[in-house]
Image (tube, rainbow, N blue to C red; front, side):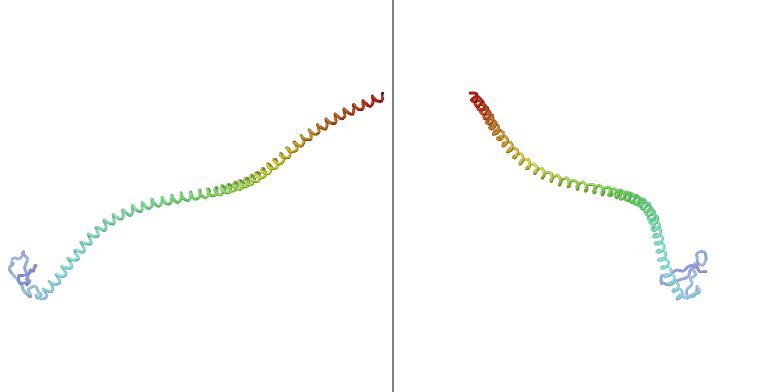
Length: 200
């Protein structure tokens, strides 16, 4: 029973019995193993091809195992990272929700304030209108006051003229009154003289 094959220095293959057999030096060539050397060479070639293919597949398998281990490690790391990111996104989402609610409340408050501002603006507009009316009325009053002052000045001039004329009239009247009194006294004296002459 041949259980091993070895290549000789000449490049030929020979069948060798195992060490458990006592016939260590028996060699078998050509048809000894039941196949020809040509067929054997073909088998060896196929064996080498299969061996090389197996080596390539083994390397690919080992590479795939390594890549798979790296992928699993990366997957675990990425999974942890993704879970953390999902957690952070949920927190961020909640913050956005809270912020949106706050902004909505502020917007509602601003709308209320805008309504108050509109009322305040209308009130200011009314006050400005009233102020303009008061300014216009004040301007008219100033014009009337100027007219009144001119009228007063004119009346004061007339009054002063009348006072002067009245004083002159009083003085003239006084003089005339004195003349009348003197004339009356003269008349009285003449009447007395006339009465006394009759008595003569």
